[in-house]
Amino acid sequence: MTRADRVLSTPPINMPVDPTRGRFLTVAAVGSMVGAGTLAAAAFTPNDVPQAITTPSGTSSPELRTAIRRLAEAHAELEKAMEADYAANDLFEAWERSHPQPKSRKGTRRWIKKAQAYHLEVTPAAWHALMDAEQAFAAAQTAVAVIPIAGAADLHAMAACSAIYDEVELNRHNRAPIARVVAQEYFRLGKAVQS
Image 1 (cartoon, rainbow, N blue to C red):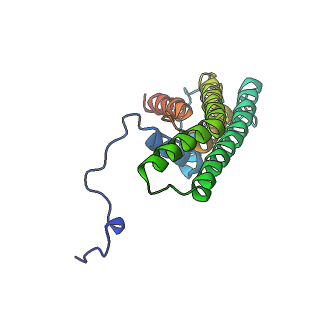
Image 2: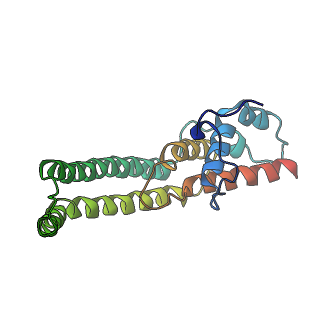
């Protein structure tokens, strides 16, 4: 067996398991949706499974489309808030570069006070706006997840939505609510086909 030339080229042996399994569910749901498995399952489904589940109606429900549109708007606002937060932090870092820390103890104390004052001047508003945008984004994700799935078009729209928005990195944990609903629906459909 060849030896790794650096630490980053080998995967960790004891990786922590994500208890929410959001990433796994997203990958499974999207893989199911995009792959030929969905079409094959629809072709081989017994006659007692409702046709609305196996045949896409072409468009998803108006309620789901509205919720997805709101989620896209919340995501756009979140990206703007992220950019504003990065810009505020860049301002502070630029201040630190242009005001080097003095060597004397007394000068260092004054420098720390000035740095803290400037940091409080430029970063909190952007940080609070980012937290508000994250909260609005999470609420929009949940609003999509709570809409009942009426057919295959809804399921496919939710799976695509999950692949896009459940992977967005937040300062808090993104719990992938849409992926959970999609995975539960695929599980329910699998049970219906098996029975």
